Length: 588
Image 1: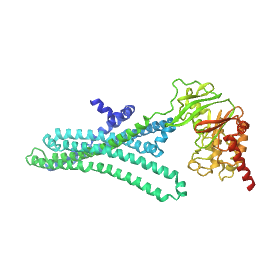
Image 2: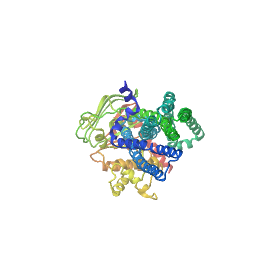
Image 3: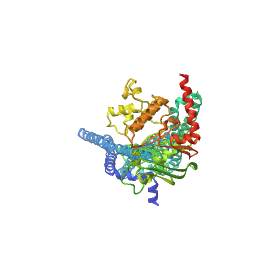
Image 4: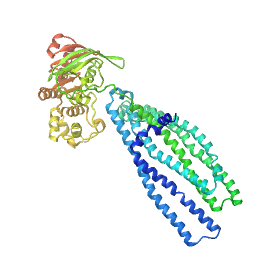
């Protein structure tokens, strides 16, 4: 029973860390314990001086010796307090480092479905607020527990054996009642802290989404409604934090109530014992000073309960995240190496979140060929690409690369073979040159310039005041849509991947630029596989195989000329787009 309680307590759950850093914690605890012992010297010295004054026996040498004891005690406590702060509070930051590392590693392993369940603001709250609560528990919490227990025990022991055991027993009578009251209060605190942390995550989500979508909010004139929505979330967070604070601040008055009762009992009994000459006035002064020293351990109980409950709630939230398993799992016996080769799709059916996404997908693409994917929005083009990237796994069917199921390869090996430019390009808040050589910072500026010429963004960059050193805003906000697409394409192409995937990555560029980029791709990617998903059919007319997608199925397939001859959706759409282009030319 005791073992089960220990394992479920927050100390038991964090025992792995305390064992990991046991040497540093032992040094810190030993130093802290010595401080508690040495802290007993000043009251004893004061009591002796008072008794010597009362008996008129205080001499100058005796006073100097007592002052020397005080000075030595002060220096000893100064040095020891530095040690325990470094070895307890300093070590606690190591826990924050480890937990952040574990969370970040978990985030990098999880499939996209994980990020649909947990929003960015919520994840940020776990990585900041919750980890800070754990750090405080491993530092200030341990300090409070050790200091309070050692100080209380040493002080009570000294009071009991050195002054008066009767006064000591009377003085501690209120403490069992205090323990009962604080235990009841701690249960309320746990629930309130849990609600407050959840509200903080929701507030983080709201702020993150509002800041990210501020342009959309302004363009629709939605500022007032957005502000009202934020006010509601902010108010809810405030109210839940105030509820938690209500229980938190009750600790100090509750403890002081029982401390006051202790003083009253001590003064009543102590005055009687002094009158009966059972204790001296100096002993009475020392005893009351020791009672003052007991106030901190009693107050520390409140701090400890606070940090323990916050830490427990935060650790539970973090462990819940770490316990999540990715939908995409590594093979137990992966292939030792990977190489580009024939790509074979054989997907009987795939449903994402019980919604049918792909069915009857069968085709083969030889190494070095180009595949074109076209179709209406939501037809399944991106799903077909994401299946190759293993953003999700096919259960009814398989995808083979060079004769092996892609599940047999390590995820890192598979994705290192592929250069991917998604529909929603993400650029980092760093310089253009650093964005382009993100995967390999050792690439030279000459290589960066060469690839930007292939993607027709070189002139745009050169026209900027800082050129390639131009710093981009968050998500590349300072660039136009077409520039973002071409910079993202440069980032993927500079590695010269064996398989290049462009998922509607030319939608924001004009037809002339698109044509020039496609021509460069044909020349530079000889012998390498390319997959192009597009709404503008002119981007895939050169492809060796074009698939027309509709409702997750292939409704037409073949080369450009074959599909035109079939007179189906492809032929009609191509003719319509050509008319639009000709109409646009006439306008000029």
